[in-house]
Image 1 (cartoon, helix red, strand yellow):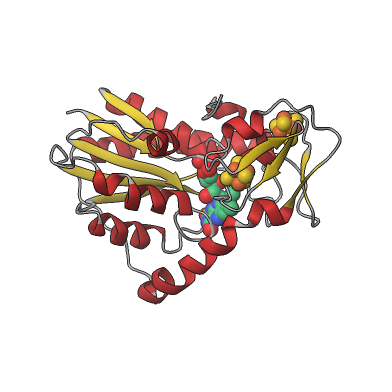
Image 2 (cartoon, protein in one colour):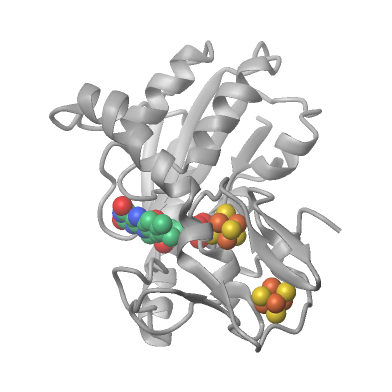
Length: 262
Ligand SMILES: Cc1cc2nc3c(=O)[nH]c(=O)nc-3n(C[C@H](O)[C@H](O)[C@H](O)COP(=O)(O)O)c2cc1C
Ligand code: SF4
Ligand code: SF4
């Protein structure tokens, strides 16, 4: 059975999970949502899965946008089994329910939803994870990914508990959070003199939210909040205007070094 994993990743956790899952499943292609947004030419297979993180209790705005604008227009006729694997640290919120709604609107049905716990690089709230903590979570994740692969191979059905106030959260709170998130980089980031104009942030931003002006990054208002630029800047030149928890999460374990622009 051929499988397609469609992945979005900010700091590399979901990218790692998608690739590990692909190895376990065999005969699997991993496609990145940002690349498909740029060029939607892709053939779907009998099994299709979405792999992405939870941001503030919901799917990232880019993931919702991808389902509505790209997935909804793809040829879904080969797809027999659709699933999602979410990466999160501790709170999944309304992520499954929000995705379920938007996938149904796109004309498909999700049969299986599960999550993998991964390190959290959301430094406005948590300290960047330490190496031992990262190692521990990655080791536990390996076992969970194997169990999820086995479920997918047997085309298991697993639908999560529906938390209270789902409709209210999805219809009213999520759009508000996404709206605020889009301004995030422009409102929260500054760039220090440590910037070497290497352009990594410009090339890797999954929302194409960064332009280079006079050799320095300038942030627009289409941020998806992934913090990839903050964590992956080689000289730590991107900083928050307001004081936040210390540390960076370059996530060397995931080998996530994709760049979406040249
Ligand atoms: C902006 C932001 C918001 C987050 N919100 C949540 C959350 O609500 N619940 C949670 O458990 N983890 C949360 N996290 C942690 C991520 O879900 C987790 O680190 C995920 O594995 C990141 O995947 P990625 O590296 O593929 O982007 C958040 C991370 C970021 C950057
Ligand atoms: S990644 Fe860092 S050093 Fe490179 S251009 Fe961006 S801010 Fe400057
Ligand atoms: S500007 Fe930074 S935080 Fe916002 S989407 Fe781009 S890489 Fe992610």
